[in-house]
Amino acid sequence: MFAVEVRDHIMIAHSFRGAVFGPAQALHGATFVVDAAVFSTSLDENGIVIDIGRAHEVLKSLLAPINYRNLDEVELFKGQNTTTEFLTKYLFDGLAKAARNGELGRKGEDLDSIKVLISESHVARAWYEGKLWPQS
Ligand SMILES: Nc1nc2c(c(=O)[nH]1)N=C([C@H](O)[C@H](O)COP(=O)(O)OP(=O)(O)OP(=O)(O)O)CN2
Image (cartoon, protein in one colour):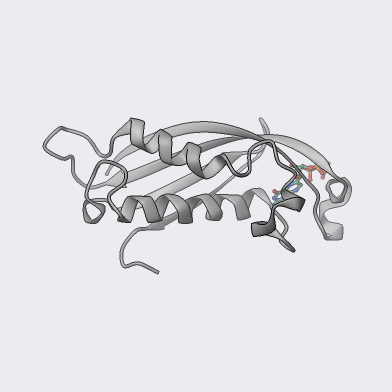
C-alpha cells in the first residue's frame, strides 16, 4: 500500500466533563500536531498517491475554524468532549469528503483509506483510520 502523509498543528483550549479526566476537567490548553495519511494501492500516471500541496490545503482549511479557539465555545462541538480521539474523527470526516470528491488531486475511487493521527503531547497520541469505500 502506498501512502502520502501531511502534517500541520493547532493551538486550542478546552475542558472536559467526566471524573476520568481529573485535572483536565478544568480549562487547559494544548498544541496538537496533526498527521493525515492517505492510502492507495496504486500510483497515478504522475507517480503520486495524491497531490501533497492540495492535501496540505485541505487539512489547513479543516483546522482553521478551530485553531486558536476555545473548543468549549465552538458551536459545532457544543456538549461534546473534544478529546483527541473525537478530533481525529472530525478531521477524518472532512478529509474523507474531500478525498471522495477528488479534491486531493486524484480520483476518489482510486484512494483506499485515510488515517488521521493527533499527537497531543510528546507522550500521547490518538488516531482514527477508515476505508473510503463503501461510503458510510
Ligand atoms: N483518552 C483521552 N484521555 C485524555 C485526553 C484525551 O484527549 N483522550 N485528554 C486529556 C487532557 O486534555 C490532557 O491532554 C492531558 O491531561 P492530564 O490530566 O495532564 O493527562 P493524563 O491523564 O495523562 O495525566 P494524569 O497524571 O493521569 O492526570 C487527558 N486524558
